[in-house]
Length: 89
Picture 1 (cartoon, rainbow, N blue to C red):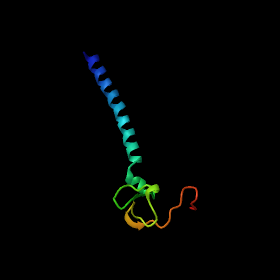
Picture 2: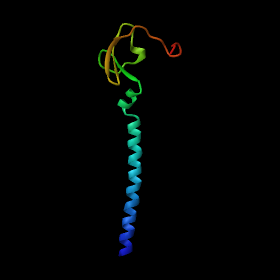
Picture 3: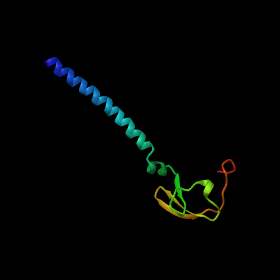
Picture 4: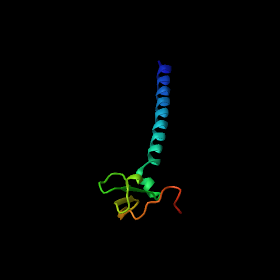
């Protein structure tokens, strides 16, 4: 009976460690993809006048947009569209 108790405790500990590591891995993946952390890296999310995520293809010169970035948001107008491959950084 003593060995059964030790085996049970050992098995419970192994199961706990297994799931603890899985949870830690999942938490790390979630943290890496946290929208606020991504914005803190200098990225911005652009929304159209309807408040929906703006797609490059659907924006036109003169459209009003809202850019959400680390620290706040700005209102802007599309002045020019430059397709990928044609921009100078």
